[in-house]
Length: 256
Image 1: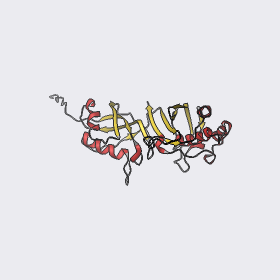
Image 2: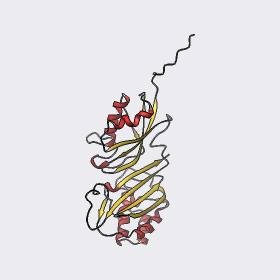
Image 3: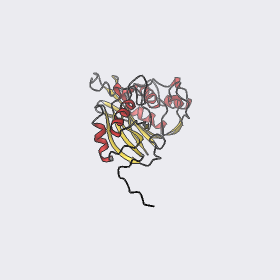
Image 4: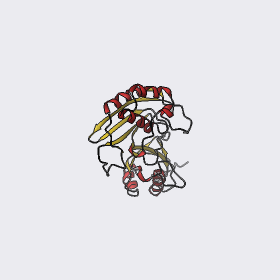
């Protein structure tokens, strides 16, 4: 039997991993929506143009309306034949300026941006000062009163480790095991901006924003360090602080 010649143009299934950055200000979150515009809606539409067929993305996780990302990770299967070294430029040429593909690589078929993630890093920004900087209003939570950064850092030491974070999960969120491990948590003042960092193996819905809202109460002197510890150990969302606004939150990176 004559051996069939190899056809370099023959289509094959490929698994493409992308790292994205986006300004979430005008989108109804990352996840695909039927009656609103999300980052996923826009990205899948443009990927279909580049790869020549319908694309269904899997993401490392959702981000809410107004939340930003430096390093969201997605993957998708495709038979598109565009060389991987041309993917970034090709996709970005179709995307709006507030969504950018930072990198692209071809990965094993069993890779999943969601299920293979080991840990994530989020940051949250608060602008301080007597006068709001209008150019930061969509990228940070403005609080005029000066916050005590040292006390907030001390409170954040209580959450490093493995704990039940029920006190900081959104009321009515999907049932998930509330125990998470935080590897690092701190905050620092940079100019007029306080930047919080949370590095953990996973996060409950609104967990970072609820933590920040409670930490702000510590920074204002409304909640003591011992009071913060009691809130964590009490596992009661009603005892914790407000949910910090979405515009200050950023998904910084996802590690695999």
